Structure formats: C-alpha cells, structure tokens
Length: 162
Ligand SMILES: CC(C)(COP(=O)(O)OP(=O)(O)OC[C@H]1O[C@@H](n2cnc3c(N)ncnc32)[C@H](O)[C@@H]1OP(=O)(O)O)[C@@H](O)C(=O)NCCC(=O)NCCS
Image 1 (cartoon, rainbow, N blue to C red):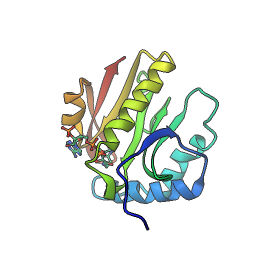
Image 2: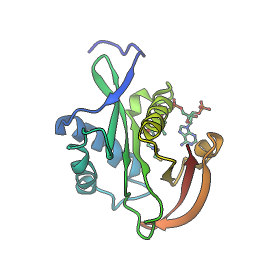
Image 3: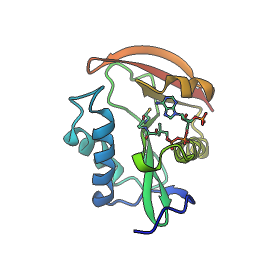
Image 4: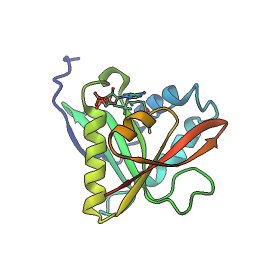
C-alpha cells in the first residue's frame, strides 16, 4: 500500500457495510475497556439507520477520506443511546479516527464539518457525551450540562450553542 499523503477531505460517508465494519472494529477496540458490554451488535444497531441517511436531514454520517480511503467518521443523530435524556437533541455521536491516523487534525476536521452541517440544518444547539474527552470539548467552548453513569462508567454530557 502507498504511504498516506496526509491530505484528506470530509464528505458524506457512502452507505457501505464493508466500510462500516472497519469503523466498527475501531469502535469496539476503543470502547473495550470503558464499556466492555458495547459490542459489535450494538454498533450495527447504531449504524443501521445511518446507512439510509442521505436525504439532507438527520441523521447524518460523515467520513474523512485520504486517497479514497476512510480514515475517520462522525455522525449527527436525533437520539443517542442514553436513557432519560429526551430533552437533549441532536447529538454529535460516534466520532472516531483510524488509530493509525490520529493526531493529524482529522478529528478536529470531522468535528468542524459536523458542526457546519448542524448550522446548515439550522440546529440551534448540539450535544455530545464522553467518558474521556471532556477537556477537549471544554477547550472548544462546550459546556458540561450533566454527569451520568452509562453502562457502569461515568460520562459527561456537553452542549454547544451554535
Ligand atoms: C478523539 C479523536 C477523534 C481525535 O482525533 P484526532 O484526529 O486524533 O484529533 P486531532 O489530531 O484533530 O486532535 C484533536 C485534539 O484532541 C486532543 N485529544 C485527542 N485525544 C484526546 C484525549 N483522549 N483527551 C484529551 N484530548 C485529546 C489532541 O491532543 C488534540 O488537541 P490540540 O487541538 O490541542 O492539538 C481520536 O483520538 C479518536 O478516534 N479517539 C477514539 C474515539 C473517541 O474518543 N471519540 C470521541 C467520542 S466523544
């Protein structure tokens, strides 16, 4: 395989289960320690509606592509998998970058693109939850609104007014 060029673009992710299976491998690996019960089937349930998500409204799934190869993804969904949070919508969800391509600005570009899409859709605010990236979201201007325990692990819900 050719070495990566470091040049990438963010665009809608095509509805490809082959692509999503690779992404699910990253997700399962990343969440294995904090959320051991979060398995492949949970991710299939998450990604299934996103495979039909190309009509210009929510949900949205974006991918970062380098030389045609997907190196990261993020979604915007109306409801996330937390209980008792119906007042919070929509969500930036399932942001992840290929472990081999982290630290090169891909995550920042994905988040920017997702927020841009939220603004295009005239969404006034957006939420995200995280168990370990709170400092990053705070630095980017997000406000913590609630802490909860999800599947046994403490998480914080953040809000950003757009
Ligand atoms: C979080 C993630 C998407 C960032 O992607 P990336 O391409 O490596 O990000 P960037 O290169 O754009 O760097 C973004 C910033 O995040 C910071 N960062 C990355 N991981 C971090 C962590 N665990 N805690 C705090 N900050 C972190 C980087 O230091 C960088 O800070 P800077 O802007 O001051 O340089 C990537 O590390 C990843 O896929 N992690 C696993 C999945 C995950 O945690 N998803 C978020 C769910 S809420």
